[in-house]
Amino acid sequence: MGSIVNSLRLITASCILCLPALLSAGKLGSEKNNLRLEKDIHVIQSILNDNRLKANGLEAEITYLEYQVVAAQRIIKLVDREETIGSNEIVRLSDQLRVLKAERTISINQYQSLLLEEYKNRDYRAKLYFLASSKDIKQLVNRLTHLNTLKEFRIKQLKALSNKQKEVEDKLNVYNGSKKQKESIADKKVNEIVRLNELLRTLHQKYKVVESENQSLFVDLQSKEERLNKALNAVRVKHVKSKKGSSAGDISFSWPVSKGLLVGKFGVSKHAKERKVQVLNNGLDVLVSKDEPVHAVQSGLVMAILELPGLNHSVIVNHGGYYSVYSNVSDVLPKVGDKLEKGNPIAKVAQSDQGLSKLHFELWKGVVKLDPEQYLQGTLD
Image (tube, rainbow, N blue to C red; front, top):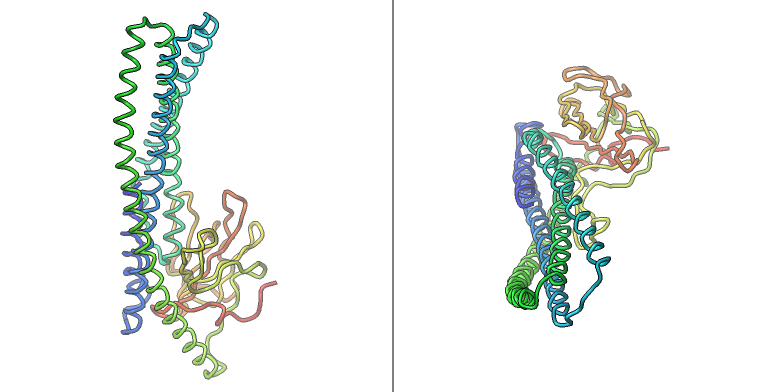
């Protein structure tokens, strides 16, 4: 778990540094400050994400150990009651044990397949360094970590099956054993409960430490996000004023899609599910119909087409110092180096596994992220 999040921390920090080099050689002092703040925010967010994974792992381990304690207590009670059961119950437990062993074998094979798949995809993360949007980085890393999430599920499944298998084996040993063997089993379970309770105390202490660190990080995150939000608003106001005072011959942009619903706006906003977490959006998110075509917002040169197997595309177009970024698209038509006219088709909006088609669009001037809504002409239908 930690390695994936450490990769996220390195990737987000590196891409924040790589993007200015990709888009422009010049850096102003205020832009440097904004980039530094943005880097700090992403690092804190990745540490918080790391801690959430740690907390989730600790919770899972606590649940796993608590089950073992309860199972051991049940076996001790079974020995104390000195119950006897018929052959039919013995057969039922034996059949249950066979089924559990078979399920565990299947789970082991599935887990090994996941490890092989993860090994095959080990080089994909290096390609993320070339992505031009921190938001895309988070989306793509989240999708890469889907494999890791599935792996964690298989591990939990294996632990649960192992627990249940051990409990059934212990029951059979109690029912089939002699009085001396039963007493020995009970003594082992008592010692096991003592050991498990000690482990549980340690895990609960670690969980409290992680939660305490999260509280401190969250306060720091809020402070930095407020400062960055003010800086971004100042840049936006400056560009809006500049645009209003400019001549009619200045560059203008059309919307990348003709129809859709704006579901994500530029700037810092609260996370949709975790309200205590704030999310920085470098552009706009537009929910559209299936296979909605994406068009060039202005004439320009295709600068980059970024692709990861199974993870869709991002297209970057240079408009003479302005840069438009179209992410989560498929069926890309132009190639790197192609010249585009305003309105030329670029791609189609890709569809997620949940059946949703959502375009992420960004607009830059040099190294400055712009609020696309302030520059796009017209409206969405």
